[in-house]
Amino acid sequence: MHRRYLGPLAALLVLGGCATSQDLVVLLPDKDGKVGKVFVRNPKGDATLDTAYAAARTSGGGVKRDTASRDEVKDVFGSALTAMPPRPISFTLYFESGTDEFTDQSKQEVKRVLAEMARRQAPEITVIGHTDQVGPDPTNDALSLQRAERVKSILVGMGIPPTRILTAGRGRREPLVRTADGVSEPRNRRVEISVR
Amino acid sequence: MQAIRLIDVRRFVLALALALGFAPVAGLAVDIAQFKVAKGAVYLERGGKRMPAYVGTHLQATDVVVTGADGAAGITFIDNSLLSVGPNSVLQIERYAFNSTTHEGVFDTTLSRGTLSMVSGKIAKQSPDAVKVRTPSSILGVRGTEFLVRVAE
Image (cartoon, rainbow over all chains, first blue to last red; front, side, top):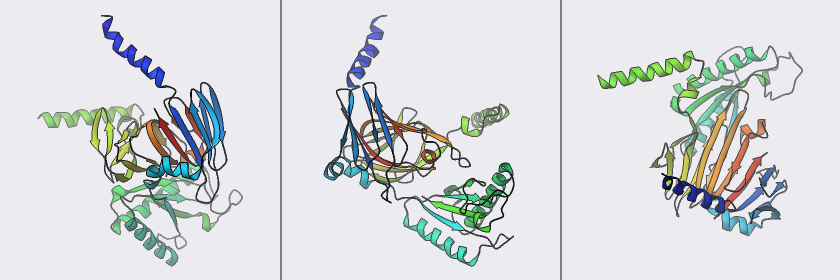
């Protein structure tokens, strides 16, 4: 009976020994050169990374703040970095006022969406509706989702498989142009297509 | 006969879940990401079963991505988070949830072995403490946006 517990117990002890895995964490600048922030913590220490190529190294338990060279990044992370998927890209569509018709400019934009999908492996899109600052959240959430669903059906009609399309209603949370509450702003009544 | 009964059971479970107020999301597995890159040996483990992963293979929360000595894989999530793993890597998606209206969500992963490159997406932008990466010895809180992690034994 006791013997049964020895296996898992031994595994636990081994895991406990491995808990001092040697980790390396490196913060990279994003494509615009901006840098985010990553906190690294373990039972014996912590570090905040907030500059480009700032690094945290853990060995023997603590967290040592350091800098990684570009060569080290290439050596250690080269394979992972070359396997990164392409960045998602957003396109914005507008309608002729009060209709389901895209503006002429938006018709061109739809062609760019199709071209972008053709360039990608296993492409998917999210169609995201946005409203202006008129009306309460629940109304705008429903309205923006309805408009996204309409655009989805247009895109399906153009031959994009429905399984590759998600829809979302972002309501009034993400205006393109900041306005006061209650302002009717056509530039905010839009549908965004995120291609990934 | 048997098949029909199985379908009935599934329908009943779904109806029950809906009646109890669970969104179908809670009861049924949902695709949250897709492989966009797969080079060499790349596998997906789900429910204790290992299968090869290809470009276009979908992922669900709690899936494990495993690469061999010549393997590397790139994955895009529905919140536009991107990640890739290099050779000899084991990465588990522990928890993933994304509300496409509010952008609230959670994204917890564990890198047990190997290398990870990540570009955080809409979840991290909305909720600074919602994205975490664990290693066998440490925990990373991600405020954005691009970073690398290696776990060496």
